[in-house]
Image (tube, rainbow, N blue to C red; front, side, top):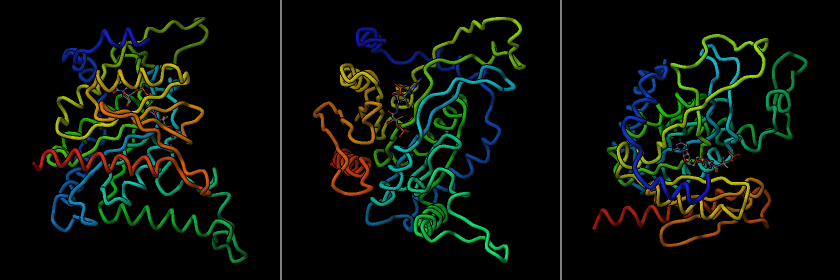
Amino acid sequence: MDAVDDANQLQETPKNEVMSFFEPAPLLEDAAEIEKSLKEFVDRNTSSSGNLNGKTNRVVCITSGGTTVPLEKQCVRYIDNFSSGHRGAASTEYFLKAGYSVVFLYRRGSCQPFCSTLPDDPLLECFSVADDSSIEVDALHAEIVKRAITENRAAVAEGILLKLSFTTIFEYLQILQLISVSLRDFGPSAIFFLAAAVSDFYVPWESMALHKIQSASGPLDIRLAQVPKMLSVLRNEWAPMAFHISSKLETDTDILLAKANMALKKYKMHMVIANELSTRKEEVIVVTDQEKVTVRRDSTRAGAEVESPLVELVVDRHSTYIKKFDA
Ligand code: PMT
């Protein structure tokens, strides 16, 4: 879709489109469990003892990883969206450091906070079985393993990090709705930092094959329906007071800024993080209606991540946003 097509869609997402996505969708099996953990998280972070680092009750929902689109109800095949989950996981660490509490909505199996420096297969690469059959961590990886376990568990135990997982587009959007409604009481102190790569097209549940599609029937023709643009629903209905940040990924730099600007206007985002696939770990361009800021990783520091200055900038602009409500 090009910028002209996008411009033609400057209206809100029609209610019937939203209903026709949600109504036939398979219900979340663990909805009650998710609601319970969200309630505990909100209670913990709205109580006075939940205020950390002098930054009162700031909270961020970070989405991370790609959603899948199942092709069969008893799913064997699916369409996936690219995202390793690194942006979301790393940003979670920096937001926690900045005193925010975090709801981390992530794709099962994608990158986790405090784990980005672990090798690809931590269990096999970091541990050995000693002579007495006890399990030991190898000296080379001891520090990073210790950090991953202690910091992750401490944040969860303190109630400042709530991790919720999804796989399909159906799960993602239903959980996002539950989170946004639960965080309403935070008003402008809540941020939605949307780094997930969300499917644009899907097979509606009611027209999906029940069993594995058979290859003997020859080439497969599938008609995919468009996933309603939920950003405008989130922005206008689910969490109208929050500070909203979406991401725009392109592989063609020439259209990246135009698309980011379009998203800013179309969905009334407060910020759009524009990134190009091959350079996304080096730099991003933060687009607001007042500025375009290029944020770069500090390449002089080993292990420095672009998410560090990025979250710093977000926290600064969020503080300005909150002040408007204090006035
Ligand atoms: O995970 P990493 O490997 O670190 O990579 C991070 C990233 C490149 C995936 C991330 O920074 C990023 O850019 N994510 C967004 C990818 C993208 O451009 O998605 P999109 O154009 O499909 O969606 C744009 C925005 O609309 C997103 O915030 C998405 O959450 C939202 N959306 C999309 C479809 C839809 N039906 N409703 C939506 O709300």
